[in-house]
Image 1 (cartoon, rainbow, N blue to C red):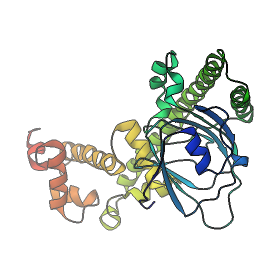
Image 2: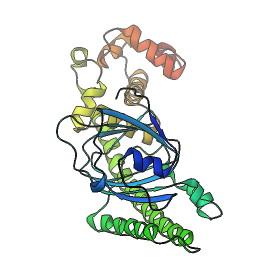
Image 3: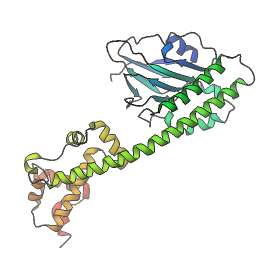
Image 4: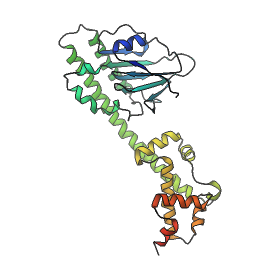
Length: 306
């Protein structure tokens, strides 16, 4: 995505005006249906910073999102969240206007004053930049979330009285509790799937280094690993970073060192022969990598066993 100057929206009213919506019926809280937003993007890239929280259930969205400097995965999920002062960049696909459906809740931090949610809301990690993928919901869960948002919208349309804030806050807390439950479930499910992929990466590398033709094939590339698993290189790197703290390239290098140590300690192959066997075109490159990972040269490592 290219860099664009963001528009800064400080109030709920400014958001309504920017999106060409009627004036909000509550100054600090609003619930909007995406079907009611008639404004079309003025350019392919648009950025905004808002001074309020956002909870969005967005279906049939074909664009791309970027939170801060991070790409946001919206390919399959339907819900995303923003805290005040976060930067959102939207890339709209060229061609026909989108027909996005769903619900959009905005509430200003001022609305939370003197409530327990004012402190508790900082505990919800899905409002942070750390979350880089949309929340997946079943059809039943979408109906549940949509129903709570509709209740909040209905209360916003009522005459404001001494009970308005507490009732709306109760609905928002219920909404966030369900969202936290769904995100925890998604996290657990994804961890199981991701650990399976990690096992497949390790098996793939073991099989790759068993090949006697590595001197012709060379070292395995990030693209090769991703293609073999039918996932994108970026997704693979994010997954390995989450599970191991390493990039794909670092993970490959660690596996290379692991196999090199085995060959150095259990075979009579020369250092150069081991380098070629592991796919290095130049033994110097192998020596440099080995020392950077172990603080000793391959030859010194071998000598330590004698």
